Image 1 (cartoon, rainbow, N blue to C red):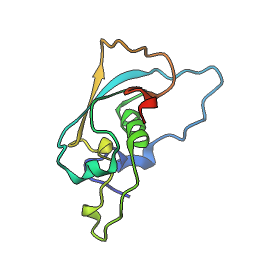
Image 2: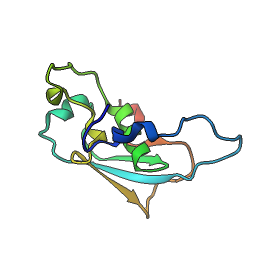
Image 3: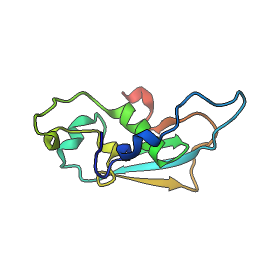
Image 4: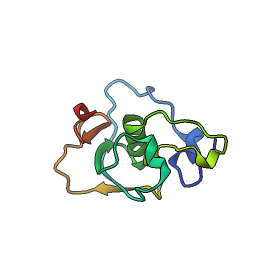
Length: 120
């Protein structure tokens, strides 16, 4: 499946998760995801449309974590362009900026650090 301008364009190139040696730790980074283009119909596929802070190994994983966390079911349209997909995966809907001076710890698993997951 291909979505132009979407991190899932190359989904077949993602490594299979869960195959790391015991004791291996992934080097994590902090990403700030800033929504834009809020008038787009794609935001109907998300329960959240404000700044998110994510700890992940790279930008793709940060976007996917946000998409899985904030996505909601939407009606599938017969015209695929009209069917909303998670805007967190779209470059023209969310800027994903690596933070070099973050108040959040880089140690730990991939997770949404802000907003508090209990918010949902």
